[in-house]
Image 1 (cartoon, rainbow, N blue to C red):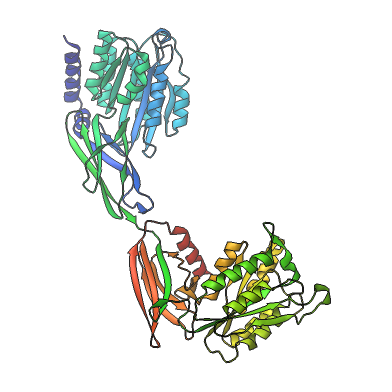
Image 2: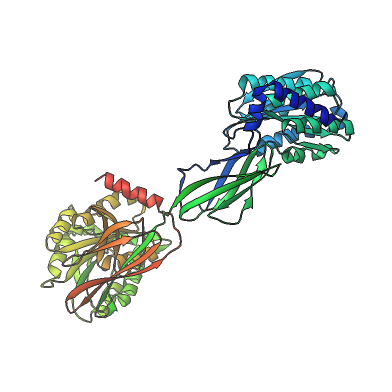
Length: 595
């Protein structure tokens, strides 16, 4: 009688005698479950793809997979598989299992008897360690290996799991005992996947029938080097293929390994419906789906500009700025081999050409006339007063500066308060210095007094050197006392940018009552901010406040325009590429929390 018929008789006889077997067989319908990502998965749009993992099975449940390797360790393997490709194949399968799936792995070795080498465990490294150290001695007893595996599944297998025995051998065994073990395996709901190394037709027939009787599959190879791929080719849980798609896209094949599947799919902002579709070996088809959300956490870009009488300006009102230059002895210090005074003179002369014509400009210096050892703390002079067409005199005065004296910052600021005369425009002092007060004055109070007159003091700390931390704190306090800005410049380019930033009218961006960013008109600087509602406040006389709402990827230019004494604003909107805003959002939340 044909071996398959023998087994069929066994199975049918057991089915009629055991109601439990019939119930188990009827429950073995194809099932598939996406285990990752979960339905509550939420991603930001910086993540453009998602890894999809799960289990598909036609032999049991898909919540768990309990897999036991039943590995032939008979002496014949020394000749048939000298390179121990059987262990490499089993280890390769373990490593290819989906890392997110709930799988327990056991190992049984058998020769003339079966031995539990590794009880069922979730520790894949432990299973790999056991598989890498299997012996090769004794004879071949398939039934003993299967029985040992069934005992472990009975004792430690999880209810509702897919139970799989991965049976490898290179030889034949007692046919009837092997079939009896197969029938018992089927009755306990465990499928046997069989793998034969060698060309034996009878051995192949036995293993093929064992697999058929339990709902498993059979693979035979004659070249031991093909064993690693053969382990991966086994359809462990009776599933032929799994495909993945998202939002109705064309299905793509998932990677199958030991009943688990995995793949990678693209994401779009919003909802993404992911579908995994399994096809069993007998052609049954089932699907599992999950909908995940991608939140667009891109920054928006905000720029603030101003136009007066149809042309770009750095202030909506008439603006008067006095530049106070440090010409004390310390300005002989060098940056990249060049004196700081030389750099400052070159930059000040350069920027005087591109300061707008409607800007009223004056120049004051301190420390430029008396030697340092004279300790002259009244060494400050208005070199060029406010006047029309004074750019050439300013450039000439800058060229004549010689750093010699002390650093009487407080005195210079008090004198600057008188330099504006009757000017009632937007007024500011820009102090360019490389050090702190050296004459015992109180520059913070002097700046506070200027603020009472509506004059802001902006401070540029230029080339502070080794004393940067201490001096920066002192100079920042001067700027803060008048509501001005403090900017550090360590090079010629940074000094040029700092002058442009402080000469123009400044503005703040608020979220609620929290100032979260600052800038200046004319800088064309883009501020990258998370989505939300903001207020832009221009520090002009009177202040101008403009609300603006930002959405992810917005590029918004807020332009304030003044015509015939009336100020209005307009928005120009576009789009930018994704730029992560998580760090900015966290920083804003921290600032708000600290208020």
